[in-house]
Amino acid sequence: GSSLNNIDDGSSLSIWENIASSLSGTFAASKDKGGAASADPTSTQLVTLVRVGIPSILAALVATFAFPSISLGLASTFNDAGVFAVLSQDSSQFVQNFLTVSSLMFSILVGQTYYFMYSQQEAIYYALFDEVTEAKSLLEQVALVCQGRAMYNQVLRSISTYVQDDLKQLNADPAVLLSARPVDDPLEAIMYMTSVGVPS
Image 1 (cartoon, rainbow, N blue to C red):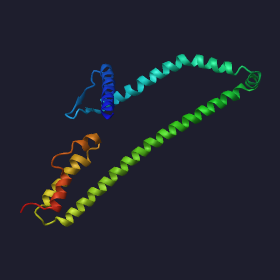
Image 2 (image 1 turned 90 degrees about the vertical axis):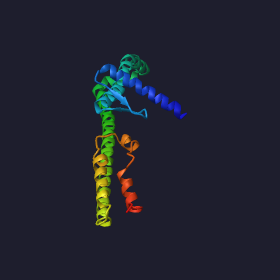
Image 3 (image 1 turned 90 degrees about the horizontal axis):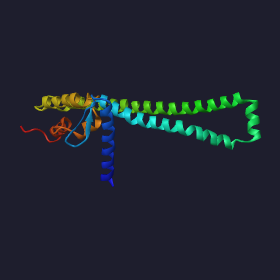
């Protein structure tokens, strides 16, 4: 079940990576110890372009060769005197209606796409704002609880480490940050010092 899906996902990813590497000599994707591919943003964009571009080109080729036969098949179904009478009287209105429907469908698709993108950006900014708010609240609580105690400087260093190595890493891959947590996590160190204490 899941192992076969993982194998299929890995093989499909390697196919796209091989195609992208053959198109560009600068593409280089390294793998960490866990086996997950870690590539720079340029390589990721190239793989995405290949994943989108090749199916689009194939679909365009299929549509180019299939359109004449489909059009002739539809024309044969409209082989009726009433249909030809309507088209002959006002063909411009028929074309205008067709273009109006096409424009409406395109507007709906583009609107949904922009709505999804802006919703995603909004969710990211809200999450970042919540994280900064929690970090500020933690700093205020540390100043109230630990000021004048021996562990105060160590707790402040842990907060500084968290801000520099975690909160400010906006360009890093979130999956990598979550899966490669440090052994001495600064937030866990703060929780341990404030709940258990330090040797004295």
